[in-house]
Length: 253
Image (cartoon, helix red, strand yellow):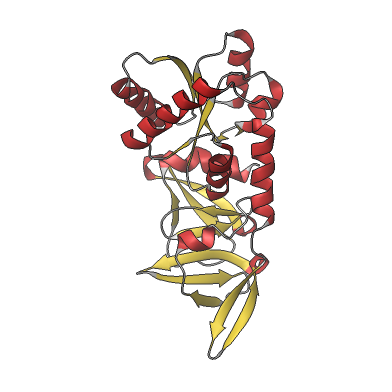
């Protein structure tokens, strides 16, 4: 089997290549591509591989734009992190995904699904457009308010007022642009699934941050990023080096 990996994080790409060859030594990785531009050029000049792995968020855009600019006739397995809307869409449309960090068991499952997929039918040319439409529909169903308990009442809090959501010692607090803090009995995972992924980013295990709350970023140790908001935060917001490219891609969408 011949395959291509589209991934802008070098170590992640190398890890996936090694894992593929562990799972099936007959798999040949033809190329590791780091950007939309490089991928468009490669697919325009080369015969299609048997399978391709597409990271969703690349430094110069999302990998969905590759399909708009060149013919991708091979089946695709997407890779992603923290993008629940995308994951739900992939499940509906029967295109598999790998959630980072990629594990051997999930890779084996994805390859088995690929073999079953190709044995039954050819790739549907409308599949990607349907996928994008499903993602947009999921985002359209995002909440516009959270209900905050206060004594014996529930008070609606507009999502547009949220600067960030913070979790410490299993206590989740919502912080607004005007400096108020509200506690909510829900995990960050649960809340993130209810937010518009275009406007909120799961920075790490402690933070969900709003796009419009971001002031700037600072380079941090070990190729990490420190994100500075327009409001005060309990502690630094650090983006791990493995997610810096994803964060930059999200921020420039």
